[in-house]
Image 1: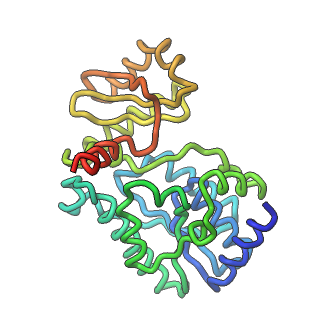
Image 2 (image 1 turned 180 degrees about the vertical axis):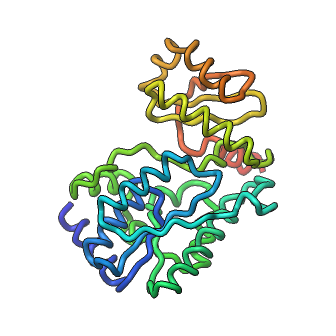
Length: 270
């Protein structure tokens, strides 16, 4: 652990100055915390805000950045207005991240940051993530990938340095709840976001509400499945109030990128 922390500190320190693409999650928070520690005011955070970002995630990002003492840029992102993004093909994330890194490049140039970094970790390389291509094209650095740090390594390191969000559940953008080929719209993002917020208010921690037109497919962690079924009436009412006609509970539970299962199946069948 001590060696890993030392290597991460050295890697980030060698950037000279850095703008961290910051969501408020544990991955980017770890990069930001080390950057502020090592580079002081030569490090800052950038959070891009759009309809695909939950309000509570923005609030958390602001809180974490403030507690770390980081300068924090909040910029509007217009990926939802890009027809290529809204069409929701399997490379949707490429257009989102391209927009993010274009914004980051402008902010970095205006404020003289030599490097742009993100919180991508080694485990992210094993899934369908077109946004990684956008990062490479924009010369964005991924210190955790450079150091071969897994998600568990990130959490362990974040806990070791006292980072408050070390055990925060993963949180992808709301567009990831909409199946490929189904258009991303502001109305659909709002419906999903309201449903997830309602479920969090019922006490569920690790969850996704997957959009299937009139049907909401709810994923919760395996540890919460029994409770979700026991509370099925409250769960159904909360999600219906968000605008869905039918509510289902996925018996396989929460897993990251479940819509990518369709992509992997197509690859196996081809």
